Image 1 (cartoon, helix red, strand yellow):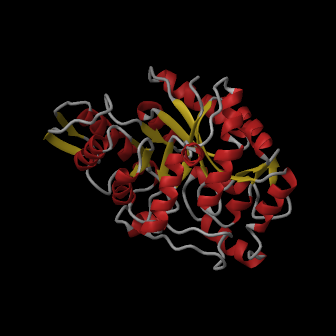
Image 2 (cartoon, helix red, strand yellow; image 1 turned 90 degrees about the vertical axis):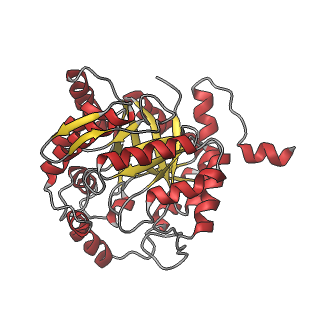
Length: 369
């Protein structure tokens, strides 16, 4: 297994010190996005995830504006099968990869909230969206691999499609794909380079990893694994738990009930698994050692956080590494401050555990010179 990769999250829908609270809220601006991105680039993170959806700034345009501000950071950018055609998405990927000198990673999002899908013009049901994603990625991968493509499927049809400009990365920018349903795992087994899942407890997610490995092997393939988590890192474990609980300081039971009712309406199997971790209750949120489900009470998608001091969080990461996870896509509130805490308190420990020489973050090296 290769060295652990750490990605950070760009809060392109806005940031803040607390969950669903106007106190300390930070609206997303170009300058805030730049500030977080340059920090993540210099702190030694390997990549950054840009989310997708109506509540966020457009991921591709945002990422494109940030390329010249960075030197090494990879950008994990979402494509949504069916919202734009596969050849156009392939051209966008090739251009981004060329202009970033091979720093594009592609996060394929086939599912999501049903109402959001309809608002964006997507009226396929859950199984049909994954069938569409299968056809879409078949064409997308062939085009970026340099082929001229003729394809006539149920959802995707192209004739003599080809790209004039090829990507830097061969055969194409790596594909990240998530999906906890049978349909999602099937598509991931055929097309994903990295299977990305939300942060479930180790005992629970280990079974999913085994299922994906088995499905990929049936396709004659192997895949890598990534996990999406929040983090709350402080000098001591007690201080970290205080900070985690403080994120919900302005959230009462009525607010939780409102969010849980909305989140339970979707078709996403991954979201259902997230909801099952806490059952909408706030009285027992440590669902596994140092794994806190409080974020999922009022947030869709990734709903769990690793909580502790640097040594403790590094130990929990090691447990996920043992299961097979190589990429950790992380976030924390507020995102700028938490990016520094994790880079300073956790990454050096992980690097030492992996037998690598732990070095100071680039910003510290620069300031000392």
